[in-house]
Length: 218
Image (cartoon, rainbow, N blue to C red; front, top):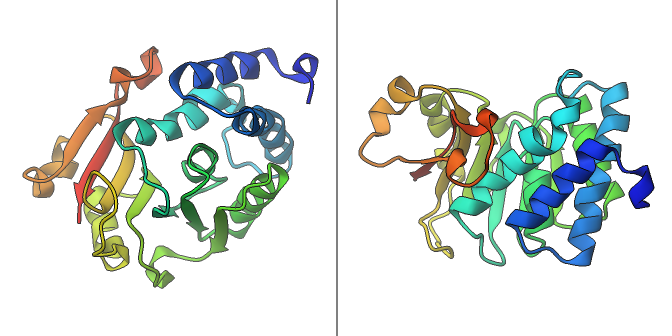
């Protein structure tokens, strides 16, 4: 893909990703390709709001990568992305951490198709996409990741069974969730254990000001 063929907003987005993360030439190519791929797929299967597709990099890709600002996943880390939709946060993180494995699940088949085809198109070999409900997933993982698919308490009940007891990272295994808005009521049952990091600590922009990463060791 040539620079001339890149949407100007995507070019700005790619440059922003490069500012925050040290990337190989392959990773730059993969992040660059996401703009055109998601535009093409979104025209067929709506996995991102059509009003928001021009914000793909700040609202979806960089937002997903906020998890990497909280924890650098060690090689060999196994992650389960619950309710991945079209592949967020799993696909951006899989590009950034090629030596970790990401299992992306969603109950909606057309969304999993998009995630599967995008991962295939950019040559990701560390991603498995499965159409299933989280209740059906029996595997063990170091971390469960998600973008606000359900209230924290409900998610904890469903994924506790999927957390491995063998730790390999600087933080104990558990749940890492991207959330927005006022979280006081949602985190109340876990207030002694949950850690909240404001994404505006990392990324500049009004949109990030009420966005957070919640980490809950399980």
